[in-house]
Image 1 (cartoon, rainbow, N blue to C red):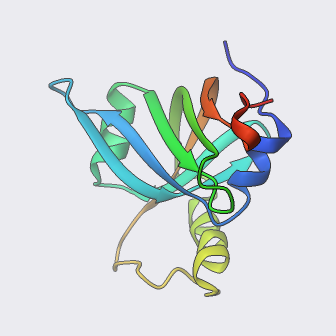
Image 2 (tube, rainbow, N blue to C red):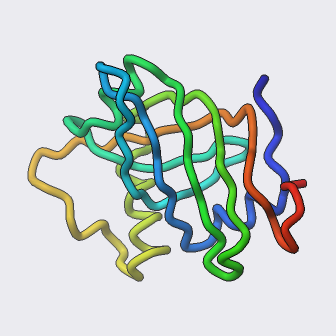
Length: 138
C-alpha cells in the first residue's frame, strides 16, 4: 500500500541527497546506480536518460529499492521500497533544477546531444532504516 512520506524523510530528500537505486535486470540480478534524489508531494524522484538500464528495467519490473543516507547525520539512513513509473513530462526542467541544487549550475552541463531525459517517480510502500537518534522513520 502506498504511504504518505513523513516530513523527516521529505526534508532529507530536499537536501543534496544521493541515493543508491536498485532495479532488477531481466535475469533477476540487481542493478545499482547512484543518483541525485528529489521529492514531490509523497513521490520520491530521480532523473535519468533514455537508453540507460534503469528505465529499461523499471518499465519491465517497476519494483525499486532506494537506499539514502542523511549527509548531515550519517547514521540516519532510509531504505525506500516502492513501485516506479517513468515519464518524459517535465524531465528537462527537473534535471536543470537538480543541477542547480547539486552543482550550482543553471543548466545540467553533462547533457549529450539528442539525449532524452526522464523522471522516475516512486510511490513508496515501505521505509526501512533508522532516522535521527536511531529511531524508525516517523
